[in-house]
Image (cartoon, rainbow, N blue to C red; front, side, top):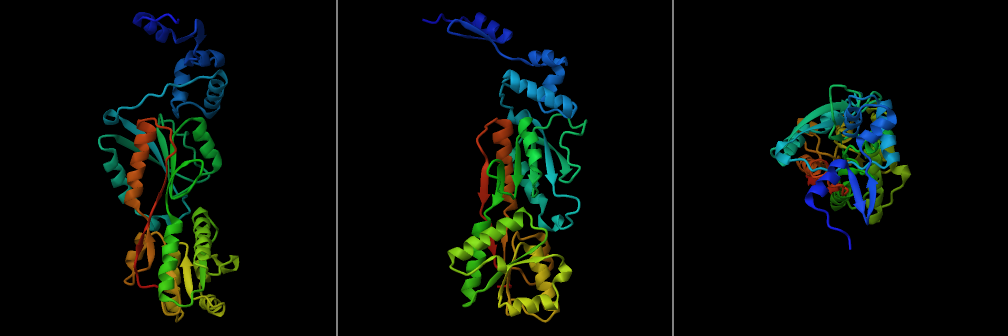
Amino acid sequence: MRKPIDIACHLNIIACNKLYFEGMEFMAVTIYDIAKELSVSPSTVSRVLNNSSLISNDTSKKIHDTARRLGYQQRTIKRHQNRTILTIKLVLGPKNDHLLPIFYDFTDILKSIKKGLGNTRINLATEINDADLNLFDNKKSGNIDGVIFAFTKPDQDVYELLKTKQVPNITINRTLPNNDYIDCDNYAGISELISKIMEKRKEFKPCFLYLTPHNDISRERLKCVKQACYQFKVPFSNDDVIQIKSINYIDDSFFKELTFKGYNSLIAMNDVVALALKIRASHYGYHIPKDFSLTGFDESPVINLFPEKLDTISLPLYEIGNNISKWILQKIINKNQEPFQIKLAGEYKKGQTI
C-alpha cells in the first residue's frame, strides 16, 4: 500500500517541484531548467512562455523549442473574470482594402463584446493584416492574451506562430476547420436568396458575379451558389461565374453580354458589387428587377445611402460580438481548450431588387 503523504511533506514536494509515484521520484521541468540549458535568465524564459513581446523572435523560438524538447508543462491557471485586464490584438483587413469600411460597422461588434464580458476589461491593440504584420514586434505591447482576426485571414505561418506560442486566436467571417472561428452561414443565406428569386420568376437562369481577385469570401459564396442550385435542380456551371476586374468594366457591352447569354438573375458576392451593378444597369437603360433580379449579401452600411433597398442577407454583427465575448471567457479566462466554431444564421432583408 502506498504510504500517505502528510500536508507538510506535500507542500515540500510542490515547493521542490518533485513528483512521487509508486516510490519513484521524478523531477518536473521548470523554467530554471530551460534557463540553464540556454544560459539565459529565468525571467526571460518566463516572459517568453507568457507570450511577451519584449524578447526577440530568435530567443523566443529557442526557448519554445527547448521547452518542448525537455517536456516542460506550463500550469493552466484560470484568470479571475472580475479582476482581469486582457490585452488582445485586433487584426483588420489590409491597407489597400478601401472597401472594408463600407462592408461592416464595427461599432455593433465592440458594443456586444463589452456587454458580454461584464466587468472584464480588455485593451484592444489594432494591427493591419498586410506584408508588415508582426504580432510580436511591438516592444511596448507586453504579453498578448489573444488575437482576433476580424474579416480577414492571415497567412498560415501566422497561425503556426500563434500555435507555437500558445496564444488563443479566432477568425471572424471565415470557416477554418482547424481553428476557432465565427462565420455567417453562407449556404443558408444563398439558398434563401435563390428561393426568393424562384418565387418571383418562372424561368430562373442565374450567374454569380465577383470582383477580382478571388478571395475566401467569394470562393465560399460561389461554392454555396453551386450547392444551392444543385439542391433546387437549377443548371449552374463554372461558365456561369463572371469575374469583374474593375467597376469600369460594367458597361453597356457587359449587360448586352448578360442578356445574350440569357441570364435574368444576378447573384453578387456582396452588397458593394450588387450596388455597382444596380447603378450601372440604370445608367445603361436596364431596369432592376424587370430585366434582372439582383441580390447582395452582408447588409452593408452603404446600402442605406440609396432609396431603393437591396434584397440581401444581413451579417449578424451583434451576435458575432456576443460570441467573441463567449470565446474570450472560454479560451482566455477559463482556459477551456475545446474548439470554438460557430456558424450564425443571417436574416433575409426584403428589398426591391427581386
